[in-house]
Length: 222
Image 1: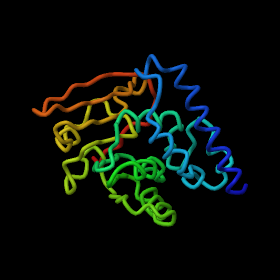
Image 2: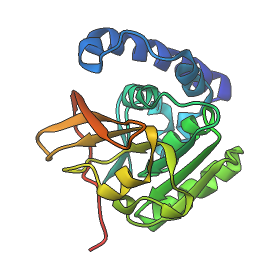
Image 3: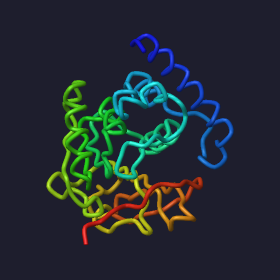
């Protein structure tokens, strides 16, 4: 497939995200998504962040396998989670679960710097190579236990977690700035909810559970 074909598929992907939001708007709590988020997703080549044989399927609204029993999230979920973060141009963002780098690439179009943690070394190395090749210079990747965050660059304006934790990891909450936002799937395997964490200026956290989701569990080093 040629670049112009992928561009057409990306535009269709954005249209499908809008249709999906119409159907799930009550659960998400909004009927429209930030145009900046949709514009970023319309520019980032999702097909470059999946295994090559899956490139023709990259713009379908579904998760796709990327190896090691991991997946790249469906475009609708990427759009919703990114929108809930309310990313701003000067934000410093922590991502937990780099995968092959797609979510980080989308965020990099919207914020000042993305720091991303991936526990699987092979995925981290591959993501770094793909991001570098495509010119995403404001993404840094660390191989490690995502539940511990990345204290070196804390505190963060926003945190996004792309794997489910039974409870919000304390280290991530500590590394979130007062006034910051965190979006993550939380709960047990059969009862996960997309969760928005808002930390007020006094450092108190408020959790809001939104739609039901299903993510792989957040892996930790034991």
